[in-house]
Image (cartoon, rainbow, N blue to C red):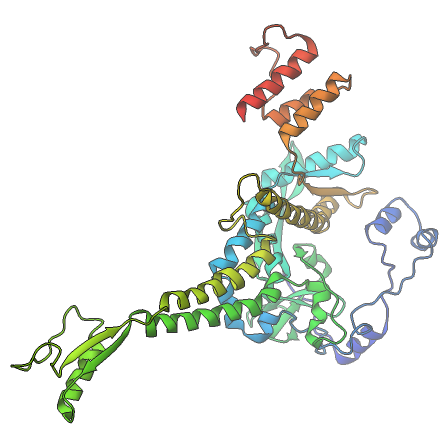
Length: 495
């Protein structure tokens, strides 16, 4: 669990930090593995081409200025946060936003995943990858929801979960396992100018805090940071001519909320105007007639007109000796010609353009959220599905990389120490057409290319029969060709 912070940074300390480059070359995991193998750090850097140790610690070299406190905490970059915090909360309750967003997040959260080694032929790497995967699957609560919450980075830019590690028994061996986790709200996260992560806290926080834009914050120590799984989406360099607050995009990423904010505000404005139009014109215009020069009659008819829509019936005076058309007391409801078509303009603007723009931004197309005219033989639906699949592949690869460094890395270090190789979180993102695969595999088999029986069973969705299990063989089929033909026929009949 997260405990204390690393304290307040003075102005002098902040200036020294800004002036000095980081002492460690930016070689990352490759350098760690080289050191684990016993290689000298400087020797390795020279062998790799004398990689320079100076990197841009923040964005002051690429932007005119940055907004930063003495604590080096960067200001919020997200446009929705900077413009109106109430609106950004309302956006999360809009079905036009949440429906496509949940489709994209849950499509990734439901993908099959595994922990894979760098070298599939190394028995030690394979064994440790299998054990690490087994530990996570056995002991981590609500794994699908954990992946879904990590996908909040799509909307906010960053997402973070506080992971709780405990000792468990795995096949008789005592190991560390991520047993529980707690989401940290993305808008509570803070970043210093060098990317160091922290979060907003209140007065009940027991440790030291630093000043942030919206209150006090704790900056995570190195041990605390290992208990936080951070995932970011669309890390973006700030525009040189842009606002100074954009500096945080470099570390926090730029979520879809930032881009959707202005179209969403336009949509809400159009909704307000639409409701006013309906209120004023859809029920018609009420016209009341009263005897001229009679103030009392005018007051009576005005009260009747104000309430005529809500009342089931209206009583008005009737002058004896006059026909209906000659009556001085009358009420008419005038329908506005073309009011239905005028109202349709608002509907097309809101649903057809503004909401459609946001949906297309989030999921790349609209065929998965609303009816789309395709026509006989049209491949529009297929192309929309391919667009959506490409987004899912991108999100899965990005999230897999974050989980590799933020979850698998700390867990491997806790259980095995620093290894000369790495284990990687990998999602199964390939969208394989099983029927096409079977047809291609059958042709390859007829040409004499050996095909894995396990792959065949995987594509037809069947288990490998055990030795004592009854199996079927079509008449005239025999050998491997017969087994393949039978499997392919079963697959075609199942479609």
